[in-house]
Length: 126
Image 1 (cartoon, one colour):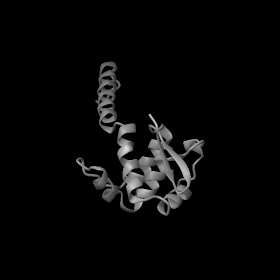
Image 2 (cartoon, helix red, strand yellow; image 1 turned 60 degrees about the vertical axis):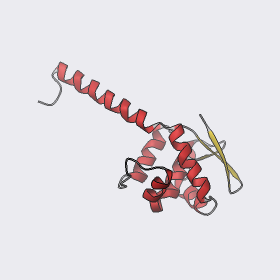
Image 3 (cartoon, rainbow, N blue to C red; image 1 turned 120 degrees about the horizontal axis):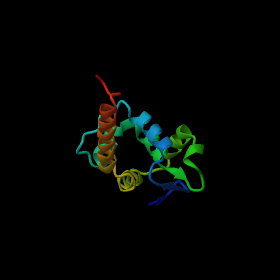
Image 4 (cartoon, rainbow, N blue to C red; image 1 turned 180 degrees about the vertical axis):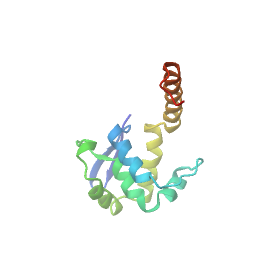
């Protein structure tokens, strides 16, 4: 799945996050409180001053690799070229690209399996 955006005369794409982007995004969001029932506008409010940096993590200029981005420079560019409507569209599309609830369910399942294996082998917490 891929979404394309024309912002400030440049073309950006949004794809499902790779591990490097996930780490970058978690770093941006590390001290943030996001309500569980937040919609796109609620998320914009929660992101506050970090919104441009978060958008810079999830968007990549067409033809570039997420690895090669200068997040700070892209955040500055987006701050003065992206409209609020475009930001909301990117955030809404983010959830289509990255089904967060599915990731959380899989993470919980993996933790249960690992805990069971560690307990069976006697390597778990005693």
